Length: 96
Length: 216
Image (cartoon, rainbow over all chains, first blue to last red; front, side, top):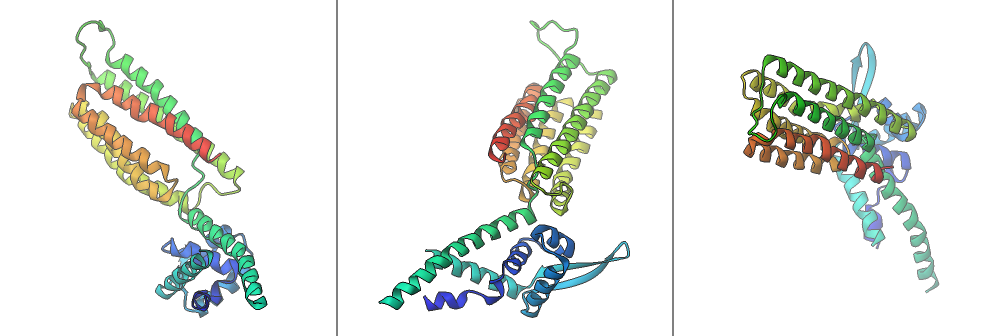
């Protein structure tokens, strides 16, 4: 049991962070506004959770300009996808 | 023993949040990668328009012929123009109805109809579809009328299979059935219009009703 609990990732305890990762593992990349609409959160809230996932090394971003407006595209890193998969497997084990 | 019981109590309390989590993950994965506002009713309308179109095409092609005798599809420049006109009007009506109904469904679900997911689905739909459209036109103008019905069915089926990764999963099996019909139509080339009416008319109506009931 302890083994399983160990696999649960602290980074994904928060619903918004879990939501961000869920969206990024099935999409090559998503921009800030798409994530915002998808998760129905405020700019500040989303930005802080993105920052925290970035600090964990689970996502990275690329800044581009679209019609001279800055557009930030986020994508999940390899580590992020691994951690997310491990987290879901742990949840599934717990529910068994 | 007491600690043990407490441990399980905490665990079962957590279970509900974990089930919630899994539900949310699945929902977000679907919503972020697929266009889900596709309306089933638009399929019913598209199917009905196609049946009307097929009937008008039938009247055009077999005009002034005794139905008891062997009939031949008579094609002059005039009838080809009429057929193309029927096809374009049917297509435009179906697209317009599809957009209108999907918009309505999106509004009901508090979603945007024109989003990243819709764009992705349409691009993947249109690559095989436009290829098939041009190919059919080329054959049509070279006089190979018989190949047009099977070709449009096959390429439409391929387009649906391709787009199904980005929208509701039923679209995939609809695409496969269209491809099979297209291949049959290629084998029985004189019955193109019947296969065409089945594929674009009847199938759309059946799938449309099923999807409308499922995703209401």
